Image (cartoon, rainbow, N blue to C red; front, top):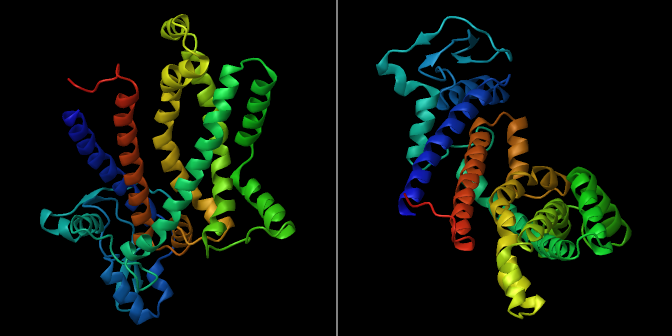
Length: 340
C-alpha cells in the first residue's frame, strides 16, 4: 500500500505539472491584457512585474511583440498560427513566463493577483471555506437522500416504491442547476420567505445552494445504490446468510450493504471534486463568496494568476480525493489489493 501511495503521489505531480503547462498556455492565448487596464506608466510596470514581455516557453512560436510606450508585451491574436519554432538559449530559460511561474510555485506561492492588491493565496484562502462547506453540505444531502432511496428501490425491485424512486431520480438527473436554483429562490425565498435569495450571512443562507447542488448527485447516488444492491443481493453469501436464519435487517445491513455501497464509494471522490468545481454556477446564482465566483470574475478580468491558482487548487483536490477513494476501496472490499 505504501508503494502504491508513493507511486500515485509521484504520478500526481506529473499530472498537475501537465495541467499547469496547458493552463498557462491557454490563458496566454486569450486576447487583451490585464495590465492594459492601468494607466500607461503603471501598465509597463505591471507587464514587467508579471514577465508578460518575456516568451511563455523556452521553445515557442513567437507572435509579434505589441509595442507600448516604454515597453512591449506578448499578445495572442486569438487564433492558432503555425510558423517557425524558436529555441531560446539555455541561459534565457529562467526568464520565460513558464519557468518563472513554476519557480514561484516551488517557493510555496501562487503569485499576486493582477487586478487586486491581494495575493492569490489570500483570495483563495478567504473563499475556500465557503466552497468546502457548500460541497460538504451538498454531499451530505446527496448521501442522506440517495443511499436510502437506492436501498429501498433495490430491495423492492419492480414494485411501486422502485418505480417511484427511479422516476424521481430521472427527474433529478434531468434538471440542471441553473434551472433548479432560480426555481428554489422563487418558491422558498420570494414566495414563502423562508430563506434569503442571495448572499451568505449565516448558515441558513447556505441551505438553498446546498440543495441545488446536491439533488443531482442524490439522484445519481440512488441509481448507483440500487444497481449495487441488485447485484449483491443475489450473491451466494447472501443466500447463505439467509439460510442461517438471520433476519432480513441483519442480512442487508451487515452483509449486503458493504458490497452495495462499493459503486457509491468509487463515485464519491470524483463527485466531491465535481461538487467543488461544479459549484461555479450555483455560487454565481446565489452570489456566494466562494472560489467559483472568483474563478469566473478572474477569467473575465484576465487575471492570469488567479485563474491558474484556481485551476491548480481544483486539480489538486481532484487528485487527492481520488487517492482517498482508492484507499477506502480496500477497506470496504478485502479482495482489492494494491500490493505488488
